[in-house]
Length: 101
Image (cartoon, rainbow, N blue to C red):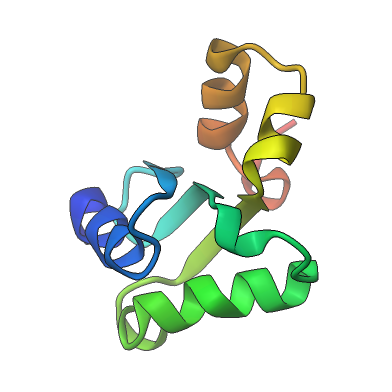
């Protein structure tokens, strides 16, 4: 699975969103995704994730084995306080269950 395909699917559903995707294992089936959208304002976390899953459609049932999501409003993203580089590192960090240490 190509990262750009995931980004495009989500960007189509969330046109003004910031979408970042990382392949966390290099195998093309485990991903981490950050989606920052005003559309998440007032929406509970589980519903935010469902909106992203819906945007990905059949990819979630066939090609994506694991997806770690961060879904934030712009205000939440700005209040996070992390630098852009730190956020990128968190996005690409190997999931805890796959770490060797």
